[in-house]
Length: 55
Ligand SMILES: [Zn+2]
Image (tube, rainbow, N blue to C red):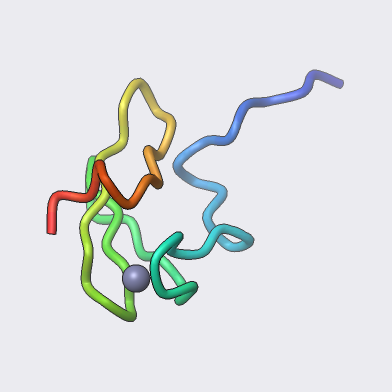
């Protein structure tokens, strides 16, 4: 058993840091189902920071 980092595939318990709605992965982008902000995935790790959102 190894402890894996937060991977892009594991989004079911991750919510948008801005509006707390669910997220949906589209390639290397994660799109919020609420406010439609778009977050990048860097090296397989979602960067879910409001000030990093691509909008
Ligand atoms: Zn949102």
